Structure formats: C-alpha cells, structure tokens
Image (cartoon, rainbow, N blue to C red; front, side, top):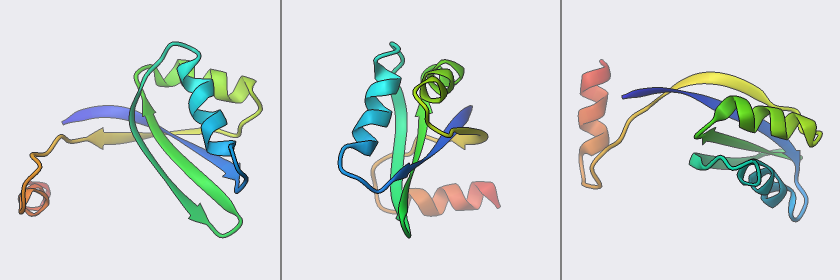
Length: 92
C-alpha cells in the first residue's frame, strides 16, 4: 500500500476537455499513475494520481483548472477473481 495524493479536477462536459487536463499534466514531465473520470450531471470529474502531484496541481491551476488534492491509499492487486474480496477482508 502506498499513500498518494489524488487530484480532483471538475471540467465542462465538452469534447477535448479531458484531453487538455491530461496533456497539461504530462507536458510538465510528470507521468500519470492512476486515472478515473465520470460524468456528474453537467460536468465531468477527473480523478488522477500523478508521479509528482504538487507539480501537476500547479500546472493545472496555472492552466485555469480548479483542482483539489486529497490523500488516498493506492493498493496493487493481482488480476484474478476474488482479489478484491481478499482486500476487503484485510481492510475490515
């Protein structure tokens, strides 16, 4: 398990908006370790863990994005049936 920082970036639900978020981060020379996005009514929320979250957050804010940072725990699992169930037992 690793403690990381997850960035939450709300964006308009328009074509190319998510791509702009990702290119803003990667153009600063930091990779993306984890990514999730979903639609929340009239906007999309992009959740990402970057290799250098403070640098990524600064770049996103400089580009005009609203961006918040939250602590998360990242867990690697085997790609097999029952792996999430086992994780749940450890977290209990």
